[in-house]
Length: 407
Figure 1 (spheres, helix red, strand yellow):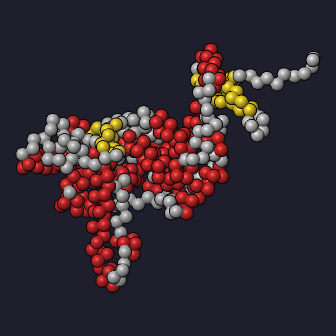
Figure 2: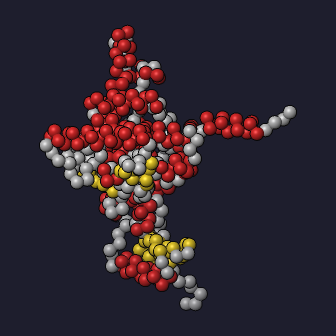
Figure 3: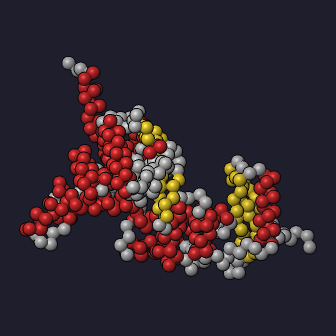
């Protein structure tokens, strides 16, 4: 009969969303409830001819029954996503992502079918974790993992749209930066040197170079040139599952830093200590020992977490005299009861903040500071360390006043 429109669905379609970027769709049947057509979607990058071949492969995959997105669960997606990211991410990152998935994401959402996952269910999980006492920043990290996995599911054609795009995760709250004074940093180095020379050297280097803890423990003596006062930051060491892993720096770029005489002195003292310890233990130093090592022969790098825990214990030790005096009047007093001037509320990472803050406040240009500390962008340095600029603003006002007269 003439005039009757065909309702046949094309087995596959493709459209170019931007130059060289294609969206491929293959018909996989109709929804049993609504009767609307359902499609498998996949992204592709390449020429139109190559995209056509990829579309044909997708259609063939669907027709062969190998594509079954309807029954995939969130847990299955997370497993597949973890497997796919293992190649490109640091072992420590993979370890932490797996820990978060097993700890919270899988118990809360793992059994939900991916195509049934809605924003309200995601938000309910977020509210539950906040009610359990997790911080907004921590919950936002869970959101980041789930969101990355859902975006990948869209690329794989498992779902058409990431439900996390419609969720409302809590905004991470940036804590006020607490930075030790030069006098406090010097006191920390002196106190650590009595019991833990490795930690003392790490504190001094962190303050002088602003290097991250993973970068510090990865340093070998071949990275140093004490004759001219230079240190090369080329690697970072992390620990995952009890094993040490050495890889590139956070920005995947190495950097050469100048060392002033104080830094050279710290490192020469460290070398003399390692030689003396090696001789005493009758354990010859390896060919290229680590600068920060608890082994007499320098063969194994210090664990980054050991620095973190040691530094935290040191700060408690620094507060102890004031806390003991306070407890004479208030036996149940805790660290939080100490006056601000008596507290040492620092983390090892705050030593990096110390280095950046001191340099910016001293007038060193932001680009130089960013490059020295391995920041990806100078704008990030400005945003994070704006608190160090007021004094420079006052100096700028003084410069303007010196060149202007209104008499």
